[in-house]
Amino acid sequence: MAQAHVVAGRPMADSNPSTESQRPILIVEDDPDTVRLVRLYLERDGHSVIEAGDGIDGLQLALTRSPRLVVLDIMLPGMDGIAVCEKLRAESDVPIIMLTARVDESDRLTGLDSGADDYVTKPFSPRELAARIRAVLRRAAPKLDDEEAPTVQAFGPIELDMGAGSVKVAGEMLRFTATEMRLLSYLMLNNGQILSRDRIIEKVLGFDYDGMDRTVDTHISNIRRKLEKSSGRRFVHTVYGMGYRFGDA
Image 1 (tube, one colour):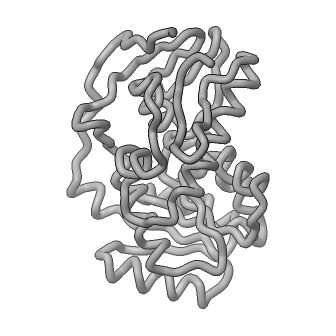
Image 2 (image 1 turned 60 degrees about the vertical axis):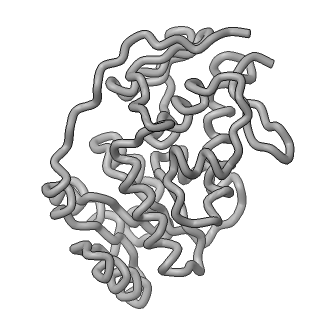
């Protein structure tokens, strides 16, 4: 069995928690009732909130106001949420949670592949959304098994560099979101072990909402698809009834 290797272990840069907490959360949503409800729950959690009612204004606010997180509806006037997410991701690594009325797996994959960190399906519970926001914000400086993940890891043709924000397979640069990179890092660190959804949620996504298992499955599907397309090999295996295992077949 191939082994995952730590090529370098540079510590990640420190951030200023007080400065982070002062930055607003941006809601990009054209339904006023939804905006009022989400704002209410976010302000109860101590967040300041800014909002936009269409995709063009939302993108502009996201690029100029440096929000701490973006709650982004897919169906927007002016520019749809997928386009906003792609353009924003090209300029910023701000966490993005998408709101979608679409429930097909292909639609969820499209949202996550465009750069979103998570998604919530309408109609949604505002408590669920608030829990997911807390979990996504905790991912800014994750600790895996009580230790910082190494910056650079390698397994076969895969090279993951968290410091550079890159994933390469046989030298080819792949497009991974920040959440996908953290999940891949955790899988590689635990090469050969079966990881349950609950463990992944707790260690990578942040244990806050017991419905997150479907998000884990979607991120895993995305990672598996990207690695297989580039390498022609399967590295992420489903162990039915137990979870997932990273490694050679």
